[in-house]
Each structure stands twice: as structure tokens, then as C-alpha cells.
Amino acid sequence: MFGALKKMFGGGQEEQKKVILAPVSGTVIPMSQVADPTFSQEILGKGVAIVPDSGVFVAPADGEVAVMFETKHAVSIKADCGAEFIIHIGMDTVNLKGEHFTSFVAQGDKVKAGDKLVEVDLEKVKEAGYDVTTPIVICNTPSFPGMVCHTGMEVKALDPIIEL
Amino acid sequence: MRIEKVINNNVVSALDGDGTEAVVMGRGIGYHTKQGMEIPQDKIEKVFRLETPGTAGRFGSLLEKIPLEHLQISTEIIDYAGNVLNRKLNESIYLTLTDHINFSIERFRMNMMFRNPLIREVKSFYKEEYLVGEYAIALVERKLGIKLPSDEAASIALHIVNAEYNIKMRDTIDITNLIQEVLGIIEGYFQMKLEERSISYERLITHVRFLAERIYCKELLDEGSPEFCQMIARLYPEEYGCSLKVREYIKERYEHSVTDEEVAYLAVHIKRVRM
Image (tube, rainbow over all chains, first blue to last red; front, side):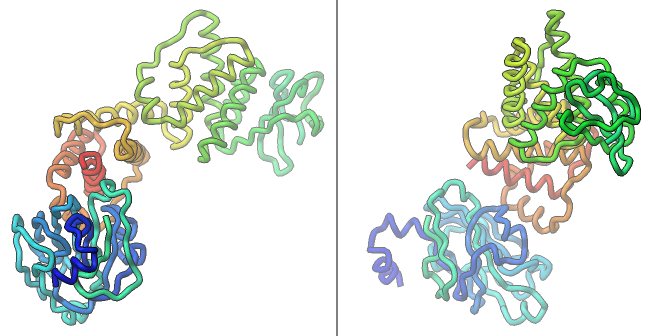
């Protein structure tokens, strides 16, 4: 898998570090289409959202888990490349209080891109009436003035979605 | 339009077709005229329609006492401000700024200029309004040959800010102090000097300014989800702590409450200047 990635990014270690990968497979949409204004208005920063078709969420970059919310619906990572981002699985899913969510990492854990972070029973969450759209927000957006977000395509986990 | 009352040779109060009161300005408009006469269109330079009850009357009595030139200068400043700021100004600005301009010119002639202790803050927090103040000073110099000090540019700027938010002058001064104090709390909390030229600093100031104005207009944001606040508290614990400190300070010093959502937003902005 990593061999393929290296090929995709021209094999350069440097270039590989400047990319945020998809934490889950699904459809990538622009942040402006997300229902919660906290995200659509980019209050926390810029990024993309994924409408997931799988419940397995993995680390989109090498780094450290900065915050794993008790309710497991959101996790923030301080990546080795300098990006600080949050993956927020679904809208208002904080109200599920962790039900249908299983976490595999804790605050302070070092992670490599592809390490499993959270597994979600997507069908159960949808049945409970929640939108499962998952924003990936770069919280320190101002540090990356040349940031490019790729949207409007289907991705597999670990396909590139954001170039910093 | 018919004359209701002659205020002086150049200013009259008048009744509009639909009976609303207006103050009309124009050279010679009140000379040898009396109540009930129709005002010739070509003599009208400016019509002030002051809809707030009482304002028109107060404006009229102010105009009785002041030279036409001062009114013209003040009108020109207000027109300029309206254009460059692209914001609606409260009509009371005609009363307050005209009075202020008149007063400053009188004081200048008596050699009694006041210092404005907030000049530095006004320059940095209300840049655009301060530029209007500088425009005003240049205008006074051009029209009257009087060079008012920069302190006056700051005072005029504060009058404009007042009119933007429809708040009292005393509150505008409090707000300006409050912005400075909030920045001080942030610098003290993190033992850092804010980088004044950065975009994040500009954003922080703008945010704090709007926050202060929302506090005084009692229009605080509180629609946000409780999750937003919890999320910020978890993501940015230090900045959230600093933001809580600010809330505490505003409560103690100014007896104003700040909502949870405002605390969270402020934390986001503090985070950005620390990145």
C-alpha cells in the first residue's frame, strides 16, 4: 500500500508529507455543502467533507492523537507535517454518547497513516436519524496559504484529498 | 416644500408634502422669507429628514447657533463616511458631529485643544473611521485654513463609530478601552506580544471589536450548538481558558455577560494568533 502511495506522489518523502489522505472511503464534497454551519462557514478552518460508505476511519497522516473525544465521534490529530486537523464523524452525533462508535486510539498515541482510529456502525447511526457526513477540517488553515482541497469524486481510504 | 420656521439666513425647517419635518439648508434660503412660503428648488443644497422624534427640533436649535460653513463641513464628512464605510449611519450623527465640529473649531480659535487619550487605539481598532477623521481634518484646513491636531481625527472617528452602532459616546469609549484590555489579557495569559502586522491579529481585533459592540448592543450570539462550545473547549483548552478569563473580566469590570458561544468563538480567534 505504501509502495503504491510513493509511486502516486513521485516517490519523494517530502511530497508525501504534505498531503492529507482520506480517512474513509466515500464521496468527497465541498465544506460549503455540510449542514452544520460550524463547518460550512469554516469557523474552525478549511477542509473537505466525506459522505462515507464504510464505517472504518483511519489516520489520514502520520502524527499524534491530540484529542479523542469521549463520545468517539470526533478525533483531532497533530500531524508530523504540521497540520492540525479534526475528523468529525457525522452531524450532531455527539448526542449518541459513543453508542455505535468504537475507538482504537487514545489521546497522545502516535499514529501512522492508515492506522485504524474509529469504527462506526454507519447503518445504526443512520437509522437513529443522523447525517453521517464527515468533515475533515485543517484547524491551522492560516499556516497553509497554498492549501488545495479536492472534492467532487469518489475516494478509497488513503487516497489524497488535501494538499498543503 | 413649505417653510415651517426660519432658523437663519441659510437654514429653515420645513414640512414635506406628506407632513414630515425636515431641515433644509441652502445659501440665502431663509433670507427675507417666512412661514408658509414655498422653497425654490434651485436654492436647496441639502435636506435633512430626521425621523426620530425630537431630533429635528434639536438639530434646528443647534443650527440657529452655528455658522453655515460648519454645517457644510460636517455634512460633507458624513457623506464621505457613508460612501467609504458603506454602512448605514444613524441620523443622529448630523446632530452630534455638527455640534462636535463646531465646538472643536471654536476651541481651536480660543487655543484650547483637548488631547484624545485614545488616539493610538482608535488608529488601530477603527482604521477606516480614523481615515474619515483625517479626511475631516484636511477638509477643515482647506475650507477654513485651520489645522486641527490628529487627536481630533480620533474624536471624529469615535463619533462615526457611535453612529454605526447607534450607541452612546460613553459606550464607544468603553468599547475602545475594552478592546485594548482584552488584548492585554491575551498577551498576559500567554506571556506573548501580539504580532500587530499579521492577518490573524487583524482578524482578532475585528472580532473583539464586534464582540464588544455586540455586548453593548445586547446582541450576543447564542444560537450555537452546545457541542461547538464543548468541542472548542476540548480542542483548544488553553485558548478556551484564556477566553473564560476574558469573560470573567468583562463581567467584573463592565458588568456585562458573555455567552458560551462568544467564549468559544473568541477562543478560536486567540488560537489563530498563536499558530
